Length: 123
Image (cartoon, rainbow, N blue to C red; front, side, top):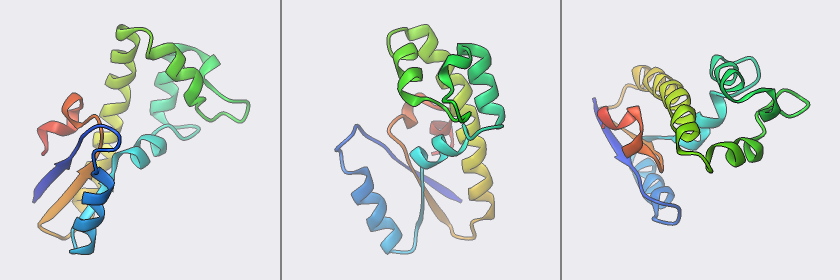
């Protein structure tokens, strides 16, 4: 299977290109959706994140407080590296699970941080 990485900064046209591929029968997996899925309450990724950054990154309902997490990690490169190490692993796992169930010859992965992640080795 050929895995096509679709990457670039916000506004670069990733979504437009992804839609074009999908309109032509090529499945595209959205990395942002996977990033939200892997940190659902009770998930191993969320457990590791709270272990690394404390329970303050959780909302009252147990979901990830993305704003609070961003405040913590985007001001500290070492903490950002920890966040990426944890989340990129689980995103890659989820993508591989989806790809293994896909019967096509080409699948796309849409993500802004592909080049900084474990997924780049697949593309």
